[in-house]
Length: 88
Image (tube, rainbow, N blue to C red; front, side):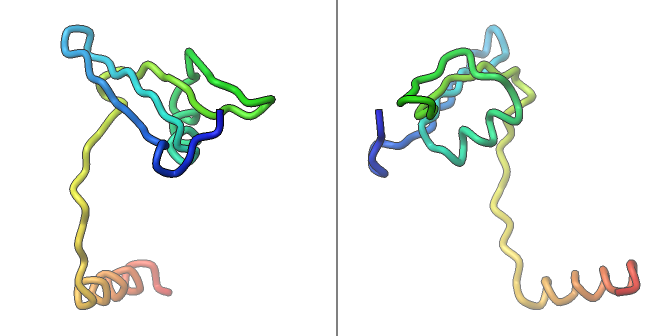
């Protein structure tokens, strides 16, 4: 099945008792990343193309991160430190 942009989703469900995640996705970008982490236990295909899949991940394989806001001044200071450190 082909999904429209409005239908595409990734769903992560955490099981506290077993400390694992059940992840479903039909978003190609997410599927590519998940395939690098684990092998899916279920796939939906359209011909040879996988359009959706499900993965089981252990509790430590999913992380949440704050979005980092860097000002132009901070970015320039980081670039200068990198030039000093690596000599480029």
